[in-house]
Amino acid sequence: MTRTTLLAALLLAGAALPASAQDTCSNRGQLDTAYCDANNDLVADTPTDPAKQKDPSTLIFAYSPVENPAVYQVVYQPFMDFLGTCTGKKIVFFPVQNNAAQVEAMRSGRLHISGFATGVVGFAVNLAGAVPFAVIGSEKGVSGYKLFALVKSDSPYKTLADLKGKKVAHTAPSSNSGHLAPKVFFPEQGLKPDEDYKVLMSGGHDKSVLGVASGDYDMAPVASDVYERMVARGAVKADQFRVIWQSETFPTSSWSMPHDLKPELASKIKGCFMDYKWSEGLKKEYAGEDRFLPMTYKDTWRPIREVAEKSGTPYNKTAYEAQTKREAEAEAKKAAEAAAKAAQPAAPKP
Image (cartoon, rainbow, N blue to C red):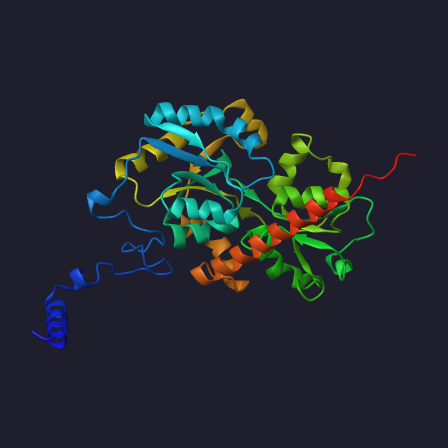
């Protein structure tokens, strides 16, 4: 049999196979080709093959990137201890350094329970097979946050339009309140990012807040919940700042797990989240919130997806790679500036 004949035979054999054998995914939506969404809930389905369902003895736990991950490791330690007892698994904290590392860790199977920042959730869902299942809240319902346009209290700025030509820091390209939402809402207030000011990337909401406080930035769009927690724990003082504009409320960061955990384990993790009685440290960190609540990406995250669409930032691989590149460039530039500053000789004492 010639090579051409063999190829024809294989093609005919494929044509004779049932449709399910040729294409086992009836719907994928915006998900990467590694995943399927047969039930149209916008997240990756659990593999139908039991051999592909994972049941690790150690669960890696992470919170979204922050200036000092050790702070949140302490805050979440009592919950991680509870999770270990509840699931019968060893729980290990993973201090992620940036959004890209967090998404990649879940995509590669090295992260099992993760709190993704709002604007990163869509990328984690579509590119890493993440399944959001819980949000922070209270008896009033799902916790939310606003986009604050933050300036120093003694600055002359009163409106967003006053910031034309000034130093404005966004947080990271994938951030909802720190980058995407400003691209959608600021122009309506007379301030166009990339036209009326050069977008600087601070690398995080806490870094933006500290940058405004130190005078490195004239204004920064930040998530209100991060700012308020920084004030509550004394990292900054409220009288250092003014909020010159704020958005409507967005749902806050979500907790996700990989799509390919064994259904029994996934169900157990969800139950542990819902059953947990918050520690005093966790209540203090999230003032006014005291519990985890169930959520779905399809319904709870609809407003966030709409901002992504309006800002021209779809949650696909091309957009993710472009944003990851920009994040890496911003981090490298910031590191180089810090190194150059550290290398400067100290000013002589008077």
